[in-house]
Length: 271
Ligand SMILES: [Zn+2]
Ligand SMILES: [Zn+2]
Figure 1 (cartoon, rainbow, N blue to C red):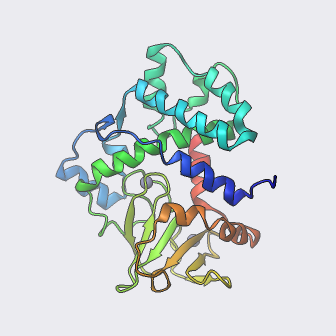
Figure 2 (cartoon, protein in one colour):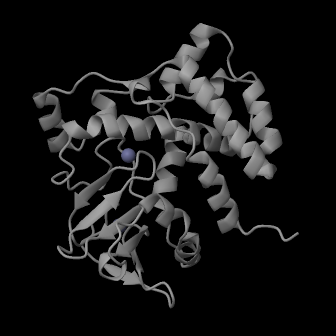
């Protein structure tokens, strides 16, 4: 049997991972008042900082075990490490509460709650994929309070993350950025780098993948994969899958010395 390519492995993993969802009432938060929303907009403060999601520890750990199961089945290289992490998770209810709350608080070192010292990359992978279904639901619940059409910042209005992808709308040529963590889409300026203050815009395309442009920035070395709406047909692109199915564009950009800013921020946040 042929070993699956990275692309296939990721696709299989995510196909299964997407089956893990949480109910709407699993994630609660304080309703943001008008003053909070105005301040958030002015100072680019994400909602997660003002009205953080609250998740019950038992729901959080149940989801984490489900995610661990998908990793075990689809990422055999990470299976043994994942098992070790799961068996080192806190069991005391009070500790579990703290752990689950910390998962949604930037800057909390969750590794210190574990009984062993697991490889941080595998732990980060498990943790990010456990947080994601909750953040996606949080974003759905919270989006009615936000005006994503006027946000115009380089970071996600819900979680503060950096965008994974961009979309150039066909008719209006407006540009939208997409957050890979909570799956929110928000409007951004048509030109310029979303990761720094540069107004320059260069992009490359590759043969056979004309639907995509990769915009890159020589000031901060960031890049962003972008769907050119005028070549994307009539269906609304599913940015979650578009991101996963275009890994070769990431590889090309990184080979040219550009940096995946989204991954980079999450790595730093973990520390
Ligand atoms: Zn987000
Ligand atoms: Zn830049």
